[in-house]
Length: 209
Image (cartoon, rainbow, N blue to C red; front, side):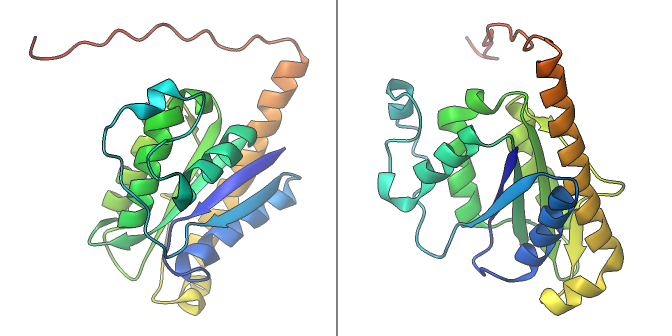
């Protein structure tokens, strides 16, 4: 059992990483492995709606060299995913948005019914709108959104400040523990012979015909 954790900050070991490390500890304490993948500081090409991914078995043909498809491969193999982002102007990091647009537009069906969680980090405000933004990706892809006992967010100017946000760190740990429980529950269900949920064929309806 493993979870892929995406660090969507331009700072490899900043506030977002500090929160995600506590999520990872919650997973580990419950016996589930995890890997934190940093998106880096290099440019990530945005989705250009070229539609080329529809002709591929997996991944995005646009910008093969920017690491997006490597993350797609890891996500398909993982039992769950966690997305972490700093708050930029009450929203998520732009580079992370480019990555998520392409990851979910190209291969969202592969993640259906997998557990997912999101967490954001800010000095002070903008966390709720950023959290809502990042949660839309797993939510529209039929992933099982995992929560904690409060909204998953931490506050602080730097990692030392974040570690002093005792409630935020506890929320992060619980988020990981809750995800581990759900992953184990799903695995036990498979062992008991519970069949995978049948997903209906999507009926697309445009408002203007």
